Image (cartoon, rainbow, N blue to C red):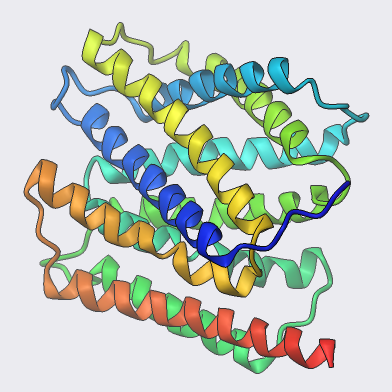
Length: 296
């Protein structure tokens, strides 16, 4: 395979686009989980729409590109898809009850949980700087949970649970990386996710309105576009350059929530989000320093 030419400016543009697409999916999920577009849909029906339409997009791409597929590692795919489906369903459930920016900020904890889970599952070593980053990020999440009787947000626990589950999904993605090409991973992930989601939605299905069908299709298409932009952005610049730019998702989420639902982040939301971002940036900084030291 010919290496992709490095282009940091294009990489940054692609990651910003991916961030806008991802934040848009949470906006549409919130509209579907409330009565904005019709009677509220169950989170499992929203996640079903996400997998259905993303699968249709990816199958179309595979049909055009006709990539050479290898024999898949089914065990890893089942684990990755199962955790991914649970994680996205919990995330879509949370945004119906709490500000999109809060749910998005809490979702940024998934790399932290993946790091912690990698210790027992991948036998990776975690140094003091990584533990510091995890502690800082979790402090921000605790602030966003608002743990007082007067302001506690139970629905924020859904977003926190989503971050834990998606962190587990990242462990399976790491095991899959290098074994199979990205388009094969996406194809199998969405095919299996659609199968799981189709069984689950049969218990809660209600006929969507025309506007809801459009929003469900939008979630799937936007998610497929986000994945394409992210993969191509990662290929054109170092991960240490790309990772901080992905936090633009939080800015887009806050903007969409304000523009569509009139939600203005309060001081607690701003402080908690800033602390989570600080923890994430500490992790990125440390990984960059470590990579530079190894390359000398």
